[in-house]
Image (cartoon, rainbow, N blue to C red):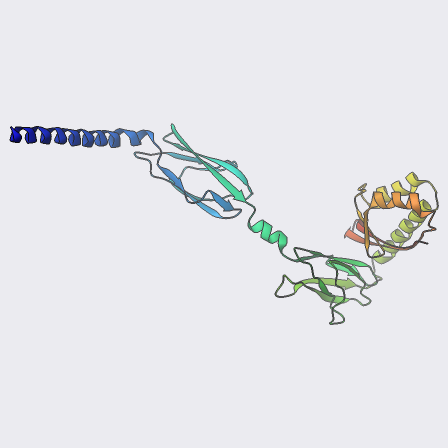
Length: 295
């Protein structure tokens, strides 16, 4: 009896094992045909970082990767680089019928680092005697400017105004606590008078702007004087920057409104006006420098 019982148990166990093996075989034979077997190397990356997309789906013959930014690929394996930060839904279509999705997060990464890097914003060409605005950009607290003449630190603020008294090519340098070596900018200073008489034209523009601003201070028609400068020299852009006495900043509209409201009461005198051109040929002004006395 005992031998018969053992034999019975053996066949029971054998039958269970055989059934499981058969089930696994059937599952492997049919299921992969309806399941996409694909992978992505990273789902969180920085802009400009390469991602590997690959597919190993059973019996796959055609692929279509759609990256969610307007681009696509029909390769089985593809390396791709997203150019802009954002959240992207990547779709893979296999054999024109099976689909799978991946969600990719692209951070600004290098762009953020680039935004923090120290740089100099200043014109490449200016005239001797012209008030030139140098602006430092980047994540720093300590700014040390050298404008290429004295060999010493000439200014210690993020923005500085400097005047070159002689023509030539100068190398401007800025040091901060975040830079190992100086950041450099080359500027060419042209003689005050040229054959094309550009500086005379600039002087005329500055005199005219000075006159119109003083008219506003003196209580003359605000609209006539304000609109004249706006239309003639600022491309109808009231947001152009006005720098007052090398330390105060305003948009043009706010500055003129301030002159109208408090200028006359304070006996304000517009002493001098200088401009920075964004286009020297068309005399387009990017910034206005005003020196004024407020009593």
